[in-house]
Length: 548
Image 1 (cartoon, rainbow, N blue to C red):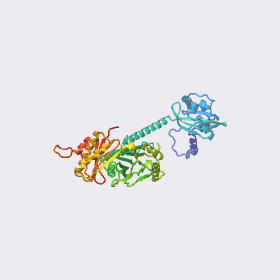
Image 2 (image 1 turned 60 degrees about the horizontal axis):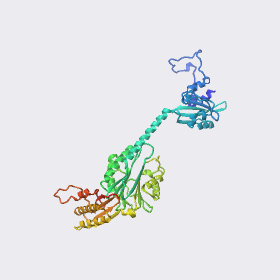
Image 3 (image 1 turned 120 degrees about the vertical axis):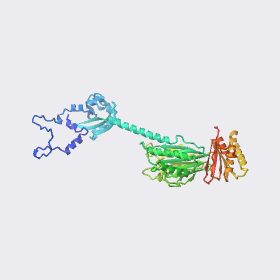
Image 4 (image 1 turned 135 degrees about the horizontal axis):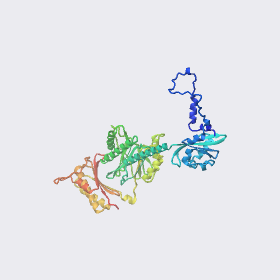
């Protein structure tokens, strides 16, 4: 066995040989030309010093047996085992020579190393299999090096123990996976756990975290029931990624819910959010669109702070892009936002989304929005079905590089028995002493025709009477009484031309007024008031209908 020829094939020996060839060592025999400082304990060889043994003279088997790495030698096209060293035998047990590797080295077969032996023979080049866990529980990196001895082809298998490196890499992967799970859990916990389902809309949403790192984004959405049958919808995106973006997102979402309770127009809500975003972090900006749906108007009133346009598909499949007006993102300050509106009649579907759904590195943003419009035009079914179809059509997968949030709402077209559960009735009030009796008679007739129970009928008439009386005393014409029923509640609303909002107060025994709103608040499930766009106000109350 010629060790010199094989040792030159061991991993690393080629580099060391090349280094010796590039930097040969020259011995100087002329002491007069040697100007270097001699070693302190230099020993000069004498004639009695035995010469160092040559590499060819080393006992190759003894050397290989002492190598801590695993070594095996196969020869021939069927890779018959010729030799394994002591380290290999200690790891997998002794192996009798002469048998094919598939029988003599089953551990290599199970690791898929036998095709690598064939490749090494065919190509004449070493092949490496990195960090594979062997049956002994250790991880090894295998290098198969072709060698030749006397014309007989052979393969030297050299396995290095990399268990420590593999375990460290696995611990790192586990840590990164846990960090991402924690970040995604934080992100999802800041989103609504269950969407509010208003009476007049069907709503579904989805959130897909982007990438595989722990740095999730700041996308969020929410659905807020305002009362009086109105619903607020919001979607936004905090620029950047990581826990900081998620924390800012959580603060903005909480603020939106608080501002929504004030029942302000969409552009005023964005004005308040803009100032809050500047206070939270002047260097952080966010986009947002806030919209309000009123079933009595059949429109979606919205305001946008640098966000992507709302897409609305009517019942005929025509898609409209609501992209005006649009202001700068939140956190820029100094901008007066404005509200716009888009029709949302029965049978219509609206989609609010973040840029992760339509933005691609190699495409223009308008192309992504146009593709979403085409997908929406053919998307039918429930809101969740539409939501899933839009996400699939955009090619969003688990390894998508950006967060995606989508909010889909439908205004269903109700007919038949379902349509009988949704009714409207309105009465114009001209003022005067006959207004209150007319309102009571109108409310009584409507509630009787809707076949409400006697107790709910009486409470509804009382609430309508008190709201009209309050408007007659403190409001100005024009006045209107509106009654609306859904499958879950009765809504009574009175509008007038004065923008002074009522408040509930404690009336003293001698006061002649001040008890109307207190009575309404006591008998109704909820009540509230808001300013209307025309400069007046609306005061409303709700009664929950009995189930069944």
